[in-house]
Length: 91
Image (tube, rainbow, N blue to C red; front, side):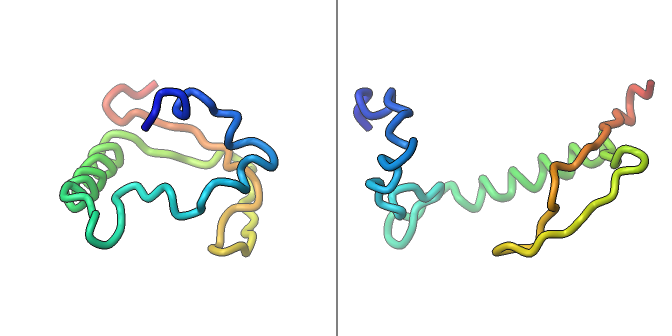
């Protein structure tokens, strides 16, 4: 990628965004150009999530109600307000 293009974040703003081919960015590629490290990266992500889950707990703030919103997938209507507790260093 040219450094000229890489340093132009404004190309993603407004109407300029419509000029970008929607199939330009695929994190691991597609078809014949599939990344050989894809499976390792997915496995590594799972290990990281397991490690974080063992060390931390994420809890909703008291009194916060989650409201579902149907979009392409089901998700929360508002930003979730949470607290993070470190299980190894409580307090």
